[in-house]
Structure formats: structure tokens, C-alpha cells
Image 1 (cartoon, rainbow over the protein chains, first blue to last red):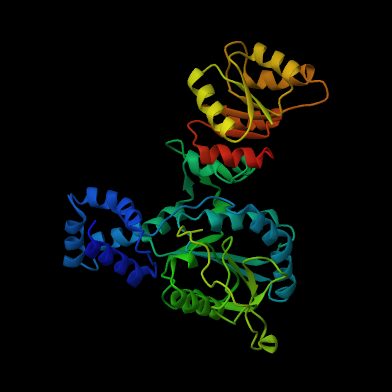
Image 2 (image 1 turned 45 degrees about the vertical axis):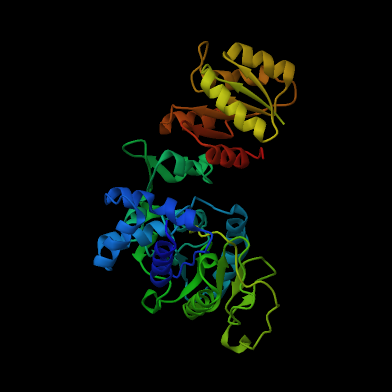
Length: 294
Length: 120
């Protein structure tokens, strides 16, 4: 891949999705675009550049952007975080929202939906504690095809075996055609999937008590990270919780959150009365290097 | 950690051995259930990786006979089979399997299952 072709594709990823590729990631772009190029009978990256330039808002351009954004995800990714969600975060939110009896969770950059459904399975296990509550999980991703796929709750053998204990497979899934497994309707109905871009305001999604935005900020530059965190803060209720990916942090990026009980990568949006300028510890602002969605 | 692979497929035994040894396991193999049960008595593995259907008995029968061949130390059993129906998996779990790996698998699945079974 020529330098100008790398610049074109990395520029497209930045403009459309906020993703930043380092100059030494030529091989990453080449491998991610190989199938798109093949599908469109492009013999070299230059032909793919031409196709995108000819129709910047067309299907090929969309396919290119989708391919540039990694989609690796699995059920209960970073199991320790889900344990904290179950044992610490959700009980706290339950107390905070006990009058409204309403709980809203946002899985941002949800890819194929395993994170959102993992939350749904946890909430289903809390059914007795949450009896009478209105529960809604909103899951969004820039990739329309993934969002449509995620809504079906269908996963292949490899997907249902990564992170998902066999007892949960038996409890929450049923067999489907072509050796696939499908989540039970009661779990699927807890999650609303929508196409949405983290670069744009999320005001139409409503306010949330918990936001999971894991393993995506690391793909943005510092400016994109700060702007995204600012938008996420704007959609969190007072006392709401933001969960980032393993190794990700907000140091030097925003002062709109407070650390939550000393847990790495977990932050709270303080209530209005608590909102004071809190100096952030100096340190590397960039979260983990992973560009995979949660 | 010791793992006994009980599977009549030489290919699967070789693939599983490679993955397990790379993760620091000592590995022994048995092609039939009878040999596997003898190995459980003499070698006392921490993990038995078990095929659903063996030449001399089913994996479920193997699990049921296992307590008679293990003195005190019961290994965890993880089924590893191309048999992937809901009913089969449910039967394996009810018999006492800690986890179930559906073939084909890759190293990510293998790692994930061993971790969930508390073996990594």
C-alpha cells in the first residue's frame, strides 16, 4: 500500500469514526481491507480508493469504514468488570433510583452485541431484586450491519464459547439453524439496538444510569477521547457510572467524572452539588492501544 | 497441572496436547474410556478432556464411573466433542462436567473454557 493510499484510508477512518491509525499500521489497514477489496474486484488499494472517491456516501465507502474498525468482542469480556457491575455498581444504582424504579444502560460501540446481552443476562439474574423496575439497555454501533445482526441474538459455536459459561448457555440460549445459538426472547427484548456514531451528540438516546464504553477510546486521538467523554458525561444521570475498558482511563482528558470506589476504569458522574473542579493526576492520557470494540 | 485427554481421534489428541502443553500442562492421552479410567487412578489428573462418544462407552458413562477410579481427588471434566446439541450439553453438565467445548474449537475458545472451569 502506497503512503497516499494509507493516508486516504486512515483519514477516512478518522473523519467518519474518529479512529486514528499510527503511521506504522499500514499492515493493519491492508489486512482489514483485503476482503472489501476482493468483494469489489479491486486488484490494488488504489482501485478501492477510486471507488470510495467516486461515491463517498455509497455502500463501498461504508464497507471500508466498517472494515477499518475492529469488531472483536465476546460475552463477559473482562469478567472481573462484570462481577463489579453485579456486586457493586448495580446495587448502588438500585438505591439511587429506588423512587423512579427505572434503570437505563448504554452499551456504546456494541459491535455484535455480546456486551449488551451480557448485561441483560446479569439483570435477568437480578429479576427478583428488580421486580417492578423498568429496565432498558440501549446498544449502539456505527456499523449498521453489525447492529442488525446483533438484534437477532444469533451466535455461532465459536462466539457462544468465548466468555460464556456452559451453564449460562443452557440457561439463556436455544439451538438455532446452521449450528447457531439464539438468545432467549426475554433477553433479546431487554436490548434495543441502534445505529449511532460516537462522534455525534447522543441526545436522542436519553439519559442513562450506566454507560459501558470499552476498548474504543484507545482508537481515538486525545481530542476525540475528550470530546467523546464529554458527550458521554452529558448523557449520564447524576451519580451515573461510566465503565471504560481494561487499562483505559480518563486522566488528563476530562474533569466531569470522579473515580468510583478506586476501581480502575470505572467513573461516576457526580451529582450537581458535588461538581467541583477536581484536579486530575498527570499521566498518560491515552487508554489502551486496542482498537477492538467491547 | 495434569490433563488427561480421552479421545479416539488422534488428530484431536494432538491438537489439544499442543495447546495444553503450551500452557504448561503435563499431558497424557487415552484412546478408550477403560484406559482413561485406569489413568485417572494411577496418574491423578487435575483435568480430563473428554469426548462425548468413545469406542467402549459414552463420555457420560465415563463420568459416572469416575468416582470409583479416583481416590479422594476428583479431576474436573471438560467435554470436548463435535456433539453439540442442547440435550447432549445439558446431559454432560448434569452428569458433573465443569465445562463443554464444542468442536471445532480454536485456542481462544480453549483458553476461555479452561478459565471458566477454574483451570487457568
